[in-house]
Image (tube, rainbow, N blue to C red; front, top):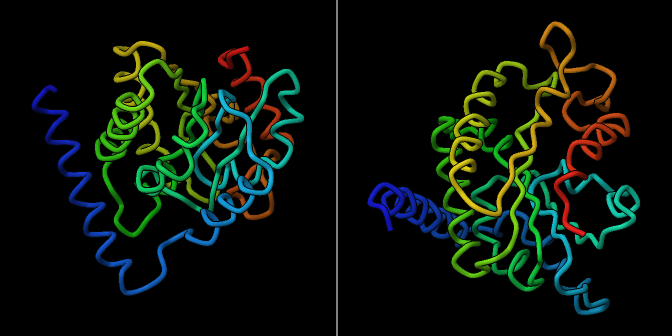
Amino acid sequence: MPKKLARIIQSIVLVCIASVCAWSQEQKPFWDEIQAFHHQDSVTPPPQHAILFVGSSSFRLWKDVQKNFPDYTIINRGFGGSTLADVIHYADDIIFPYNPKQIVIYGGENDLASKEAPTPQKIADRFIVLFTLIRNKLTDVNIVFVAIKPCPSRQLLMPKEVEANALIKAFIQKQKHVSFVDVYTKMLDANGQPLADIFREDKLHMNSKGYAIWKEAIQPYLMK
């Protein structure tokens, strides 16, 4: 393993350990949602070798994702306002049990908006850790990363989003069986600002017009 990657993984592990220690004093973030997934799976076992969507609320709120991709079998495990660190922490609960043939990831936006305010490089490092974690257990699985999206309520973060997306894309271009889906530029108007009419009233989450953009962007990368 390259020394740089080893250092990145070590730093993320230390962050995760610190988080677990803090959680010992209170309920783990998104614990109820993860338990709800466990219950749902026990009642209706999901198919193996499906396409797994995993990440934050932009996936969680995509309620009709299966209808948007009727020719594909989709498992949606978007949860809360999760970060990439949260997805890493819950990987044994929301990724590996499904033995997916393809994993579509959306994350990083909430990381940047958190009080911690990590740098774009740290966001890229978290994706690399998640990518490596997946590759170590699911060697041949195809991975898709959906670019961090722009939104009106977080316009101040847009320069960091652009930088984080560029760093993640650069890493992806050096790997095999992994793709970067650029939804970021597709969600901007002629002035480079987030399209106003594709978001809900909170100016953060997308409406059906926003998801239509995502559907068109993502579908070419999905495996039959």
